[in-house]
Length: 265
Image (cartoon, rainbow, N blue to C red; front, top):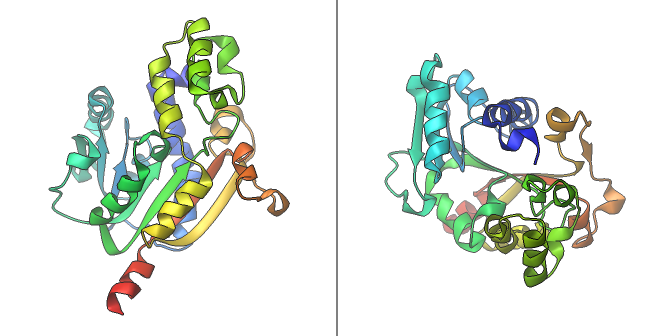
C-alpha cells in the first residue's frame, strides 16, 4: 500500500494538481471553464478534483456515498473563500433525484470502474446535464497492469504484482487470502471493472457524442504520484481490445448533441 492510500490529504492534493494541470485544459479544448458555471462531481471523495473549479468561482456540487470522505471534505473546505459555492451530498447517486439544477460540467474521474451496472449509470446521469453541458470521464481499463487496484493491498508483494487481478475470481480470492488481504473490496472492483470497448459501447448506445478521446500509456496522474511524464498511447498501439492491457487511463469528453439531434428529427 502506498502512502497516498492512507494519507487522504496527500491524495486530495494530488487530485488538485492533476485536475488543474490536465483535466481542466482537456475540457477547455471544447468547453469554456469559467467562474459562472456549475460543476457536479460524482464520486467526489474528499473533493480534491473540485477545488480548482471552486477556486475559479464555479458553483460546485460533490456527491459521494462514503460518509467519512464527505465529512473530511467539509472539514477541508470549511475555510475556503468560496465555500458558499460548495454543496456536498452523502448519498447513493441513484437516490439523488431532487437536485434543483442541471450542470454545465459533470466530472467522473476514477469512479466509473467502481460503479455496478454502468449500463444503468451512464443513462441515469443525463438528468443532471444541461443541454449544452459536457461530461468528463477518466478511468483505467480493467485489463491494464494495475486495473484491479491491487496497489492498495497491504501486502507488499501483491501490491506490486501486475495483472494478478485477471486471474479467475475464485483463484484471485485465494491469492488475496494467501497474502492476508481482505478480498471483498478488491473482488468488488473485479466485478465492476470496465474495458474501453464496453465503455464505448454504452456511450454509443446512450447517444452520447465523444468530443475528445485520449488514451494514455502513462497516466497524467503519474506525474504527481511517481514523477513520470504523461505519455499518450501511440497510434500503432491503439488496437481494440489489446490496448486495454497497456493503457493506464482513458480521458473522454462527452455531450448529448447526438441525442438532441435525434429528438429534433
